[in-house]
Amino acid sequence: MSKNPNTDNNTYIAALFAALITALLATVFFLVEAIIQNAGLKEFIQGISGNIIATTLSFLIVYIFIISRSALGKQREENLLDELKSGTNQLKAELFQRLDQITMRLETEIAEKLDPNNKNNFLSLRLDSFRAELLSEVREMGTQIGNLVNTKLDLDSNDLYSFYGLKGVSTGINFQNFMVSRDAENENINAVSYLWADTLVGNTINAKIICDEMDPFLRIEFESLEPGWGCNINLRPQNERAVRLEGQGLNYLYFKVRIPCQALENPELLRDIGIAVRIVNGKYQHWDYASRAGEYRQFQVNGDGTWTPIFVDLQDKRRWCHFESDGNQYISEEDISNANLSVISGVVIKLGRFRPGTRGELGYGKGIVDVKDVRFSPNQPY
Image (cartoon, rainbow, N blue to C red; front, side, top):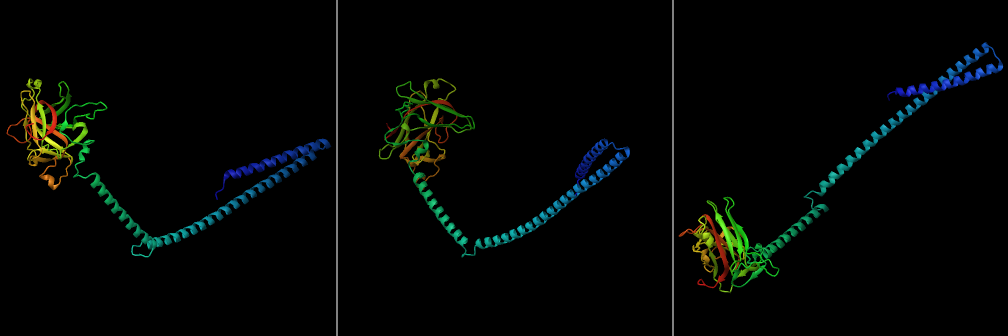
């Protein structure tokens, strides 16, 4: 251990202080005795000399005593630290030796229990059992999920009209009469499911219910620009219920369209407007009234402001082509050549410039069209 100078200084000061106190007390004693006994100078000097000798001896005695105590304390501290260090080293060695033994034992036991070739150990048996139970549960869950999909999400079901948010199915000839109201007792709260425009080129379309006449109608304003695709609007069924046609002999979709007089007076708007039709069936499939993809059968709207009747044949399935860009993409082999139109959940009307003698996309332009009285008919000359 290193020697502490502060400890030596403190020891020296303590010894000196004790000696001075002793010398002071002795001097006072001899001085008082000399005065009382009226002693001479010789006796006083002898007393002081003895006092000095006594003080010196007391200083040495006190210093030696303190130093010896300090030395003994240091020796004891050094011995204690040596003992602690030795014990710590011994304990550390024993602990490391014990840990090495435990580690080797654990490695041996784990290797034995996880050995895949050891079929007799308990852990291997438990792992095999757990693997078998897990595979069984996974197979059962797969079966349940498959049944749920087949039951609830049957892509060949005629009840997928609910994807439009429709509340059910009804029968009758009416599809949409545009008598829309937000009254609590009125279920026909909206006549349109969506409006579609080619935003890449800036096409626009909007619609509004007009009730100025005895029969309400839907006014559609559109603008289609080259080279985009034409605008269209999806009419929502009455009271938000799809219409079932089976067994009713309703073979045609029928509605009326016109160009309003104010639009005919505006030179910037089309006078030769054409429309094409797309049907959304109960399977949420979209079908174009076209013999081939993109080859729409176009209907021309009268250019004199009168209502034009439109009849769309629902019974000749050869006139319908599956539209792949919207709705349910799944289609069975039977439906490829035989469109299922037994349930109608949406009527899509495409708008643009009429192109006579052409089957395909409508032309470009800006115009206004009114639509009313969308229903089903048993025959064409309704």
